[in-house]
Length: 271
Image (cartoon, rainbow, N blue to C red):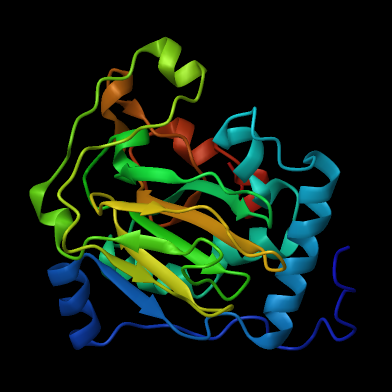
C-alpha cells in the first residue's frame, strides 16, 4: 500500500544542488555522478506516495510472460503526480542541467523505472541514446532513488568512461520501436561496476554511458527509481528525420514553436 501522505506539505521537499568544479570534471571524465540528499525526508515520502498511487492504479503484478515495458515502466509520471511535476519542471536538478547542458533546457522523458520484488528480469547493456538518439549529444539521464538499491534488489551497473566512445548505433526498425523491443549492446564489461544508491540520492549520467541492471532477487525489498531525462531545448531525433524532440521547455528559449507550445499549460508558460 502507498505510504500515507506527509501531513506538513510546507516542509522542504528538495535540497538545492550545484556542481563544484571537481564534480563537473568528474562527470566529464567518468560520464556519471551521484548527488546526495536531493530529496529531503519529506520529499522522499511525498514522491513515493504519489508514484505508488499512480503505479497501483495502472500496473498489475509482475508477469514473466510480458515485456519490460509492461513490468517495469510507467511513462509520463509527471502527468499523474503534482510533486513529480514540480520536481521535473522546476526542481534542483534544473540548476545542475544548466551546468551540464546549457541555458536552454527541455524535459525529454519522465517515467517510473520499477523492479518490484518478484521482478527478476534483467536489462542488458545499452545507452539511453540508443532508445532515442538525440542531437546534440549532451542529454543527461537522472535516476532518483526511491529505495535503497544494491546488487540484491537490482541496482544499476555501469562502465565508467564508456561514454567517450560516442554513439553506438543499433538498427531498430519501426516495428521494433512499436513493439518496444529491448536494445542490447555487446560490450567488454571487465571494468563494469555496480552503483548502489541510497533513497533520496540521484545518479546522473551522460547519454552515451553504457549501463545495465540485473533482476531484483530480494524477497522483501523493491527497487523503485524515478527516471527523468533532460535535453538541449533544440535537440532533434536523429532517427525521426531530425524532427525536434517534443518535451516541455523548462528554461531558456528554443527555435521550435512546437517545443515552446508543448505542455505550456502545465509548465505555467503563456503562449
